[in-house]
View (tube, rainbow over the protein chains, first blue to last red):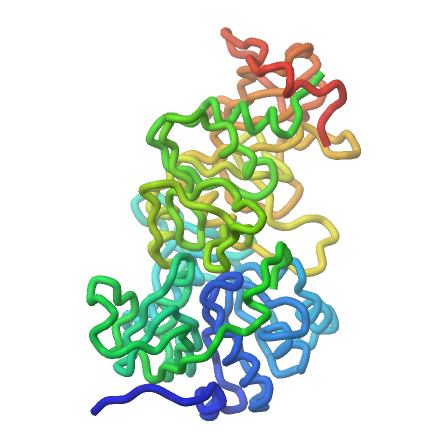
Length: 233
Length: 229
């Protein structure tokens, strides 16, 4: 019997190695695997490349990982989010590298990787500073730049419900980067609000089919992500 | 005289036709949704995977899984939908979003727009700004007409790094409504109490005054005695 469930987030992050590339799900709090991130800080892997929309906030979760000096490079669209003290501090000291990617391009580079594509041509960024060093081509009369697929060793996401086959269901705005990220890494783990019996997620509502997921772990949300706040994190 | 920030938002809202799909940037654009009259169907899109977004959530009624792209807690209108990021940006890049209403730091006479890198910023961030500026069918800019030091923001050429070249269709400021056309900028409307000459004096790029150029029709509650900053 297939059983992709794990008992703890500690097991979920055990395989992470120094120098790994990690797709980190979530946009704001929805879909962010806060418990896995805290476990990753304790696990100790370093020289990580993290792919995430923002740069985390404060000194917990991604902000904490950066604060701890575990992140070598961040690939993000909006690392200037409010509350990004940990990233800002290390970035200004030159201790963390930044690859800035427009948000839609970031999502599509991940989607391309998970779909077996080498990359794609997009108009976004053509003729701007973010086109530097990229192949450019005029397609249907419009200048486009080539963006490469973005593969990773690990993807960590949070979903609402999951089952032992790895099927995932998200709630409201949790889907964001998580759907493509689950397709684009060698090792994919989802933390979920609720582990449910196989068959109880209506097939119509499986947003990430289990084929993409290696492990599911049920864990209460990190308390930080249940706080209502206007500060980014 | 000029318009308040809400006045600029109100004026934009008047131009959004029924049935349009609209993405609102942060700042003045966010205020636009508050001025769509009841019964007029305008659908608001949020980059993080929401179409049919409603007003901001009331305190005590926030849902931690329901935020907009500015990380504010929001509500849904009937008929709303959720989707993932690739789908969300297919809506943007694929030209399905009819209007992106964006704040800007500078707009040039040829429609070039700069809004993603500010002078003196410590950490750069682009977010969805470029995707919207390149992808939306119509890019509408809202901004104050001049900087807080009184310098024009509508220029012959942008001095800041571009978000996208040739993308702006119409500019709404506290002083004017200006169209970007292949022949240059056209002044359509000026704020109550102003005149085309005054608007031109606050604008670096030359403005052609439209034959039917008129004073904006905006309720007095949106009039400001001083220029908006």
